[in-house]
Amino acid sequence: MAVSQSLRAGQRPQMFSALRNSNYRWFWLNSAAQAMAQGMQFLVLGFLVLDITDSSYQRGLVIFAFGLPNLIFAMLGGVIADRTSQLKLLISTRVCTCQP
Image (cartoon, rainbow, N blue to C red; front, side):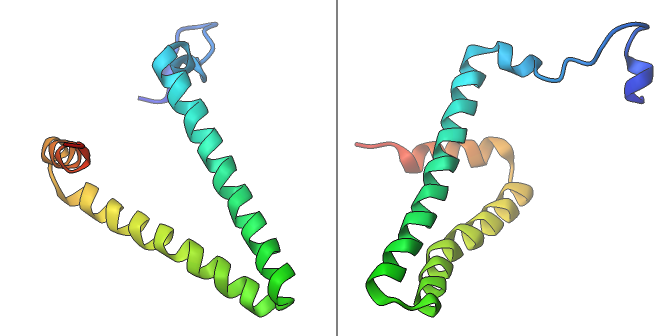
């Protein structure tokens, strides 16, 4: 069903209705803060390597080496999430992350 057909006459789509839930707001703020912190870490790490070595080649190499695991694990995690049962995946990640 198209979006225009699912809405009643005169009703606007609720684009940010998920933000009404306080748990989702905390999750969203946490995700945004983590993304900004990681971006700052990339930036500062690059400037630090450039300041120490004065080599833009080594700066690029360090940033590439820092970002490569994120790319590999993101793709691997996507494949695992697509091919396994959601319940089994949730239980296994919960069991693996529990501290004794």
